[in-house]
Length: 371
Image (cartoon, rainbow, N blue to C red):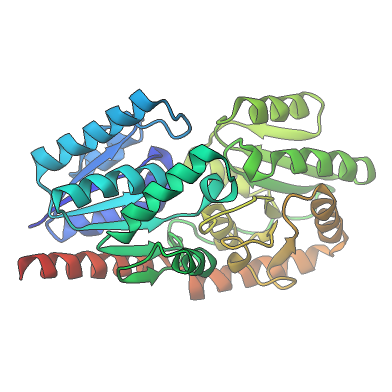
């Protein structure tokens, strides 16, 4: 039995996308400790025998004292648990967790779930973070990427010196996310944007395009469901809800999201950047048409024109055109696109395959350590 330490940053997302990996680790007899911000869903991790230690991680803040506190917490965990392998997810755990693991001489596997603002904004703080992340990832024992573009860029920029592996994002649990009946015609065309309320998810473009499309197609109904993360983006969505442009839902639990999805014909995501969009994969698994930006991490989730529609990022005009095209499609065509999307994710994004890849990498690191 090995001791596995996992450093992650969003409890709900980690629960949704990595729970099957935790089950596989526990089934293999490993002792699993998770450092993650406090959240009610952490009880699910404990229910399968994982130990959860609430983390002081703040995803958006860069207060030096808070960052030092997080590093100190990671240091304490490494010294007290003495893990055999560390798994890190997202920027801060990859950066700070990687540095601490390197200092403590513990093998670590980092997952690059997307490049995000740190790589697309050239401010001085982001340059400093990139430099630290480069040092950390260059000393990783293994790296896992969720799309080829991210992997190619970091390879070009000298971030990769260890074995690197490409997986199909987090994959999708095809049993849990089963095919749903396509909604019958009732005079409405409903689309759902499941996302955190952030500028970089395309909230501004969503509101502008929706205002235009609703003026021409009052039968079009746009829903938004997700956490209120950025105050300005959340305020914009609430204002649009009050004006009747969109229907805003708060964060929905799995059963609630499935119930809402039953009435949706399409899933929409005008994101600026993704590692691999799980909400797109889940939407396709349910048999819904996908409308998303032509960027790494989104374009892979669909076949343009066959299972969904791609449009340019950061453009309300492009989103408007995609919505207009979708609304022009006959109902039977939308239904057949949804079924084709289910087939696409079944063939290419099965979560069981992703879990098997992680287990193989973890076993490789454990075997190497025992030599």
